[in-house]
Length: 507
Ligand code: SF4
Image (cartoon, rainbow, N blue to C red; front, side, top):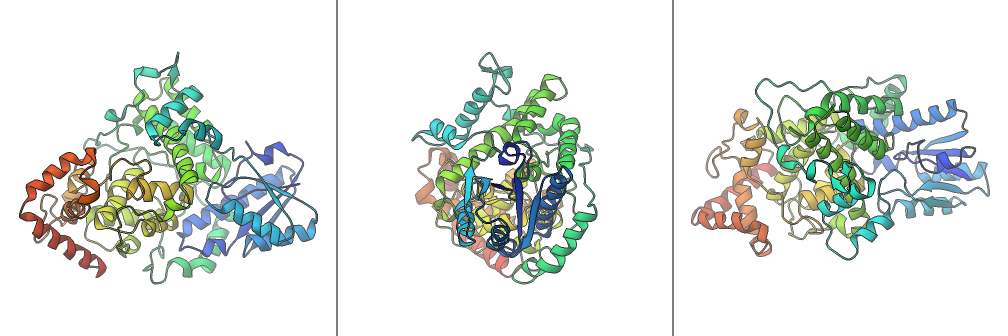
């Protein structure tokens, strides 16, 4: 048997690579696959460089590794089965929908076969999740408590440490004037990563720097992400030591001059398999036990990894393929070009998009409350925003972006989100410093210079009244909409004008 190691399974801690130490290894760097979307060049550099470093590490440890740089997986499998007829491949089940079927088909066409085993890069397997979920409604908070009890993390005698399951009310602070977060680590590209970055620039540029993408990634900043296990462990150390102690307080804050704040920046390493979620959670829990980080910070982080990340993976597994195209609000607008170009006077959107262009990353509140919120109230078709996130973010894989964007961000399916995360300029003003430097007026809804979020927000509620007014969590906002009275006509007109200006690139 040969162990097939996929680009998001770069682990020597779990899975068939560990279970079968004497077996040959196959890795396929499939370039046609990487041309399906206009990927950010840092994302392609990250995946290819991490794969090549992983190959070299295995070889240095004496493993036989066949590494094929080819167009398609089928070509890679043909090369393998030509050299090793009668062989069978074994791999962990990939989490993205249709991936295992596609790989099995490619292997079959190449004259061989693949056996898939449980993907041990997660903390909750499919059977356990389905047993927990039953036929009931999927609620993240319930699942998170189930996982806390199951793993014993932050538990004491069967109860949550500190007496509460969740310390979110302490996690919504904005930093005081003059606060400087610790500098996040940057991992300088070595010779192998530079070689891959050149290859990406030479061979993939047409995918992302030509119309209709408006030269989106033509001038990204320096590549900075961990590409080896050693670098990923350094990133984990750095987070737990320097940023975790303040992570909770400012996890929902947004500052124009600070793209990383105290966020972990571990999602790329987790999603490639360089770090296992168990060790990440256990390091954070240990920091609490050793009094190096307060409970509300550690709990907030543990909830993201042990709760949210695992929950989304299984929601995706259960709800696909419908989730990818779900659109219960019937939103039909095209994604405005400004998501690719960053070309807008709106200070919040322009800064966040520019950060994505530079480094393929922004933190979760910028993703939810700026990028997704704008698309939601604007009326963007969910699948279009999902595709943008998938192409633009270094840590984006289908299993993680689809439920986050289509459901959480754009309220596309109503599978677990109980209401849309729509807001006016109020939220952004409360949680960021963007509005003070923005040419738009945060308190104005209609007329010259009014913040686009405001009219779009009320227009969103108005347009979706049939579906949303009966939602008990929306009662208060609809009572405010009722107060708008005759202003509603002006709001509708303003919203239509905003969409027209966005289409013309004049927002
Ligand atoms: Fe964003 Fe509106 Fe604030 Fe400008 S005023 S930063 S557009 S929320």
